[in-house]
Structure formats: structure tokens, C-alpha cells
Length: 322
Ligand code: NAD
Image (cartoon, rainbow, N blue to C red; front, side):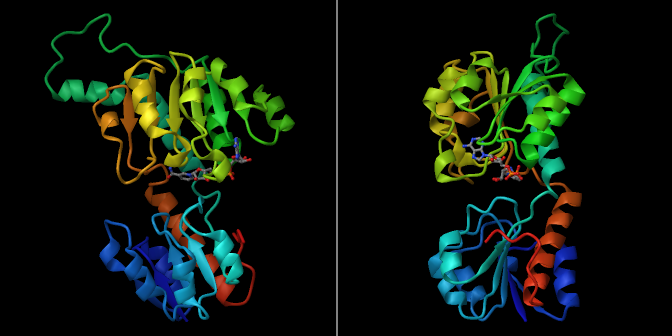
């Protein structure tokens, strides 16, 4: 069996595949950049499985090259918007992801962002390094408390629920949430309030945190209209996917005081970042690292490898999407 790994991933996953006697071809050239379409076309030919990452756009053309040998595309991510699921279905290819193992880490990163923007940590760090700290001041770099504030969770799935847990247990925040499906048990446990329409929730939030998958229905879910519904004192946190927010308008909104601040891990045109954002102090930018801890990346590698092993040994992989 031959496995094509589009970019180097933690050793633990590679070793699991090698232990099965599979030939593992790693696209080493793509250590610090995305794999090119050409590299994928070459690597996939004659492979039995592909271990892909979220920067790989796996479309019908690429899948075609892999047929008839490829059986599974194991994505090293919980999101799978980089894979054309319809084309995979047409070609009878299994697609898997890595749900759950990154939930805690992404929720922690969400809180790191929320605390950092509210307490102006990045701005204060830049201020200190620039030798601007001349004296303690009663109004120097004043921020905002999280405690007792209202958090609006957009998408109450695995990560959204974990973020709500930290917010309630750690900061006694009040939770509002919107999701296609209400969760009465969650409401009872967390004293949370459900909103069927995001429009009805946004005006009440001090912080809004996005945890929806990228779908046609969530593209630009947060646009000019929605940002204008938020409080002028509110903060937007996005650790889901960049295309869910209209990034150009977000930059304008941050510049013009439509909202107070934002902290985002994902970008609409990534790896490009809307240049206006880089000049603003009321935004924190992290380069899509919400799941980037050693522990979690190792678990993701194990999970992706296990999905491949199950599929190639004729069983249903545990994290089958389609
Ligand atoms: P999940 O499937 O458990 O949760 C997604 C939730 O969003 C579900 O409850 C779903 O019902 C809800 N939803 C769908 N459409 C909605 C809409 N229009 N409005 C409100 N809610 C809606 O997924 P998860 O494991 O919690 O992950 C969420 C997303 O986070 C992933 O799809 C991925 O894109 C992103 N993610 C990003 C990183 C990162 O590195 N920044 C890491 C992991 C996950």
C-alpha cells in the first residue's frame, strides 16, 4: 500500500502507517508552504490513500488522477471545506476528518484571544518593547473585563460548547447562543439562552465567538449588516474559518469604531491578510494556529493515520464524513 502525505505531519502518525508496512511518501518540499497542485497530482498517482491538510484544495481533477487506486482522503483537520465532497462521492472515495481531539486546544486559543484583546496584551507588549513605558498611569492601556459579561456563541458544536464552559466556569459570563438546533440540556446546565436568529442575539453580546463550519450558508455570515448590529463596545473572536467574516468590512468597522475590537486566527484570503488590519491596534491576528499544540497535533496525526488503516484494512474508518 502506498500513502501520499501532502505535507510533513508529526512523526507519530507516519510511524503508525509505516508499522503496517505501507510505503509512506511525504511531500517534504511543502514543510513551510502549501503543497502545489502539481505536487499533489504527482503524489496521488498510484497511491492507495492521501493524508491531506486544510491548505490542500482537493478537487475533482486531483481525485481523477488518483483513481482507481485511491480509496480514502484522510484530512488532518476537523474542517473539511478544502475537499470537494460531491466529487469524492461521485468517485466512491471515503473522506475522514479529526473531530474532538482539537476541541480543548481551539477553545483555549479562543480564550487566549478573548483575554488578549480585552486586556490589550499584544498592544501592551508592543508598547513595552518600544520603550514607551515611562510611568504607571491610572488610565494607561485600559481594557475590559470578561467576568460577568455576555458571550454570544455562534455555532454550539464541540468547540462552541467548550468555549461556553470556560466562559461560565472560569469567568461567570452569561451565555447566549445561536445554532440551527437548540440544546435545552445545555441551556439548563449553563443558564444559557437560545436565539434562532443571529440577528436577535448580536445586539446583546459583549463578545461574539464564531464556531461554525464553512458552508455556503455561513460564508460572510458576519458581514457589514451583522457587525452594525453588534454593540459599539463589543469584540468579535473568530477561530473558525476566515471566509465566514467579510474581512475587508471588518477592517473598516474596527477603524471606524463600529465594534471595539477583534481577535482572529483565520483569514478570508489566507495566507494573505487584509493589509488594513495590520495597521490597527484593536485587532489581534494569529496565523491559523488555534489547534497548534504538540499534544493536539500528535493526536490529529494518530487519528488521520488510524482512519487510513481502518479503510485500507476494509473496515469503516471511525471519522467518516462521506
Ligand atoms: P461542530 O460540527 O461540532 O460544530 C459546528 C456547529 O455549528 C454545529 O453545532 C452546527 O449545527 C453549527 N452551525 C452550522 N451552521 C450554522 C449557522 N449558520 N449558524 C449557527 N450555527 C451553525 O464543529 P467543531 O468541531 O466545533 O468545529 C467548528 C469549526 O471550527 C470547524 O468546522 C472548523 O472550520 C473550525 N476549526 C478551526 C480551527 C483553527 O485552527 N482555527 C481548528 C479546529 C476547527
